[in-house]
Amino acid sequence: MGSAETKPIGADLIAELDRLAAEFGAEIGGLATEQDIRAAQARYLGKKGKLAEPMKMLGRLPAEARPAVGEAANRAKNAIESAVTARLAALDEAELAEDLGRVVDVTLPGRGRPLGTLHPLTLVRREIEQIFLGLGFEVRTGPWIETEWNNFDALNTPPDHPARDMQDTFFVEGGRILRSHTSPVQIRTMLAGPPPVRIIAPGNVFRRDDDATHTPMFPQMEGLLVDKQVSFAELKGTLLHFVHRFFGPGLGVRLRPSYFPFTEPSAEVDAACYLCDGGRKVTARTCRLCKGSGWIEIGGAGMVHPNVFRAVGYDPQAVSGFAFGVGLSRMAMLKYGVDDLRSFYEHDVRFLAQFR
Ligand code: PHE
Image (cartoon, rainbow, N blue to C red; front, top):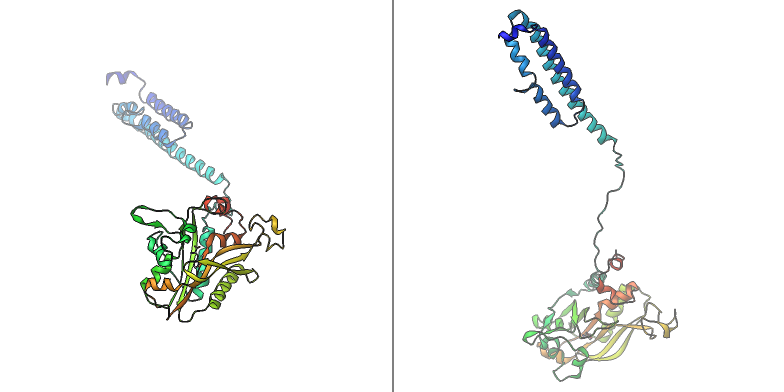
């Protein structure tokens, strides 16, 4: 107390308080974050802050000196607090102005993600399914791993039959094979129930082929119709309807006498080559797709062999039927004008993205 009396009472403290307020005002202008501003505020107004000492001295002043100094103390506190509020508001304002200043064109279209597409072979399968559903056929599927009996024996192809060589396939453990065609679905369907039968059976098949025009796996689609007095004319009519619905009415189709153990009589089904149109567009001899024949084989067909009916317990005297099998990749090649079969299996998006 004694030392306080030696100083010029009051005036000194008032000057000091005003000086601190001014000092704070100068300091805060350079602070750019709320955190820094709050720290500065605490350095002045906190318990051990710069104003704490003059405030302590205020209590020791003689009563008559206190009002003026008290007023200066409030003034300093208020000045510091309103400087804090003002500075924080200014910062908010600046932030908002910066946000608004960014050019945002709300009319720009969004950045789209590229959508996947259905594989062309899937598109072809679905379209063919629709055509046959319209004719009253049902869609059936069978397993890729088959018994030899379903794949060969029941289809009138006993173990020593030379036709097995045409469909050399892969044997897997347990005496089963990867099916070499979709024809075993004929057997499965007929074993599962009595006639009449009207099915198509799309799915992958496997053969020991691997070159530019043959892949060891390829999609096929089987067709089977069994009823009373089914004729070859109905087979031909069904195939023509199918091909013309699928490719358009103009495409040439021909049936060529052929041989399959499970059909009699049998035929190969050819469609006109899209690239040379049967030799009309480019000299037939130069066409790389049909190799000059003007035709592309799309599958086989025929009337169901009586031995096939016997194998599944159908009476060949009571029922007859036709069957066919088409290569879906061949159909897709013709439909989309793809001249390399491998394109379907390489999964290059530049190729696949064209089938939207
Ligand atoms: N399964 C035969 C093949 O893959 C095609 C076919 C099916 C032929 C039905 C006649 C009847 O070569």
